[in-house]
Length: 190
Image 1 (cartoon, one colour):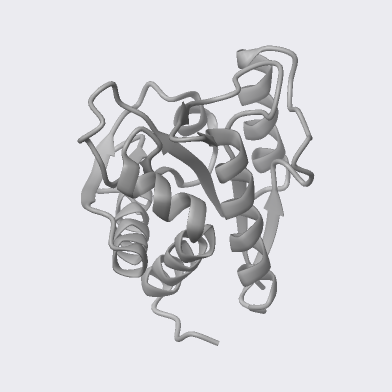
Image 2 (cartoon, one colour):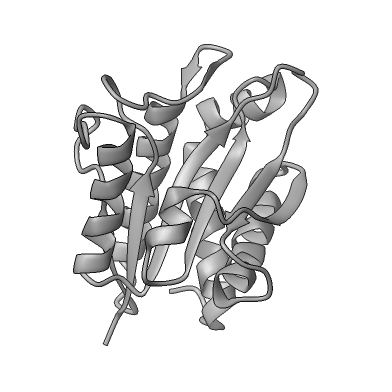
């Protein structure tokens, strides 16, 4: 039976909860593209089954921030997914802040270990700084999913170097997440 991975491309292209901006990039566009690339990698690997929260770049989920988040979680819980990955980009008023990090509901859990593998995969593939896995039980998608959930911050749109990597090679970020999954499950690459 394939491992069911739900990929949530965080934020919406318009309307509620559009996400961060920086260096000419919109978070929801980067999230959508990396999620789509990751789904394509997983679809080629018979060990995985995959679903996306947004199947078209213009797809809007919910009518406000709450219903957007609720819809994403409901889709994953009803499938039901085995793992939930929420893809995001970060931003900071200080343009020197950079790197890749992940958030999970609780430390030393399946999600925590998966987050470590994913961050290691992304940073090895892209050269972004490894900011590690952080605990944040306040994020709605981490609190309300019924499976291990990892919120991945790919890089900082406000940082020139991170933004360039996200713009030029979103496929590297997808490949890094895929390699992190393979490492976590102790699978070889197909």
